[in-house]
Amino acid sequence: MNSTAPRKPLFITLEGLDGCGKSSQIDTVVAFCESANPLGVIVTREPGGTEIGERIRHILLDHALIEARSELSLVFAARVQHLKTVIEPALSLGKTVVCDRYADATYAYQGYGRGLPLALIDSFMQALEVRAPDLTLLFDVPIEVALARRSGRPADRIESESREFFARVHAGYLARAQAQPGRIAVVAADRSLTEVSRAVEAVLQSAHA
Ligand code: Z5A
Image (tube, rainbow, N blue to C red):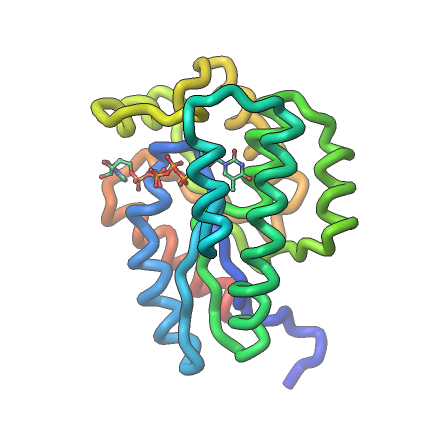
């Protein structure tokens, strides 16, 4: 085997604006990964993925006002619990982990959206030894499409933010994809579910080649 060949992606994250359609594509990702990894696949999400993490998720999405730095700290508290008790144990068994949102969401929402310094998020990442995913699928849609897709359901605290906030989040995601093209694959998600699924499979195929 060529020792310089890239490692097969075992830790895969899905990202994008709320309403981008990432959750609708999880089954496609899982089906591909199950066929690629006989050791199995687990599906999880952030914030959440553990009992403590789901409690923190409830606090984060509740409408009570939270200071931006408290929000950031809660996101990382949930993440460490998730990494240590779910993600890393699964990876160490050779399983594929598919996670609906992860650290890129922190840069996009708390960094670009809330305006917290990106260096502060870097510091949390380093101090808490938060690993990067192997592959991130960024589902990209114009803000209007995301807002329209999620209309009709009650908005949680973060979903109640302004259009300007989501414009910053969107720009933040794209900036990260531009800076890390080897890890973050942008999937144009303003297409039919089937077309998006085909694009997802193409990214996964190429990452597993
Ligand atoms: N957050 C944060 O601030 N910092 C962090 O570090 C992390 C998270 C990790 C919850 O995330 C919040 O947490 C999120 C960011 C914050 N807040 N906001 N706002 P979440 O991922 O759990 O929640 P969500 O973003 O609202 O995701 P969702 O509800 O699962 O939506 P989605 O995955 O983006 O979309 P979907 O459910 O797949 O699709 C939405 C609708 O569009 C649905 O009716 C579909 O049937 C439809 N759809 C999907 N695809 C298509 C296509 N291709 N065509 C037409 N219609 C479609």
